[in-house]
Amino acid sequence: MTEPAALTSLPLFPLGTVLYPGGTLELQIFEVRYLNMIGKCVKTGAPFGVVSLTEGSEVLKPDTAQAHGTGFAKEAFHPVGTLASITDFAAPQAGLMRIRCSGMQRFRITRHEKLKHGLWIADVTLLPGDEKVTLPQDLQDIAVALKNLLRSLEERLQPQQHAPVLPPLQFDNCGWVANRWCELLPIPPELKQRLMALDNPLVRLELVGDILRRTGIVP
Image (cartoon, rainbow, N blue to C red; front, side, top):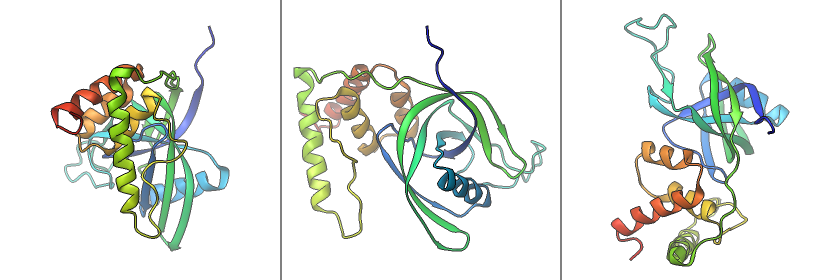
């Protein structure tokens, strides 16, 4: 059996949200720990890892109680995250960057450490991508509802705004449809994380369908 691919010293960006494979994320960067990291990623074309916070804040805060010996307040995050590739970059002024990135492959953290300036790095094992599973007939209404929602969102786009979903559109793919709904639904980050971490795209879509039907989005 082939050993799963691994990355070492992957820089991490803990956030209060969840990035899905095939999804997009826009970030405004102003902390020194991330300005340096993003600058290196832009120069080399390397990805960084997005992980969802379980404790702490997106912005680095001092440890006022001095309980952890690092000078920083405690941060903790889920062990499964997503590689992010930068697709758009701008530095409108010194100390400020704006990026847009796309979600790539999921990973699981095997070791992590916080560097002295507050940046997290990790050794990770890359997880297999979703197997392509064609939408079964009894879940077609979920794809139709997504198609209608995306059309409505695109009609309301203002100039300079990006489309909410990147092509290629895959309305016949269980994993793709489930992931796009997970991004768009106003559900708690903890639930988004659990759904993202599921290995079975059909199960993920069925759970999304339950949410859509409970909320009346899909009859």
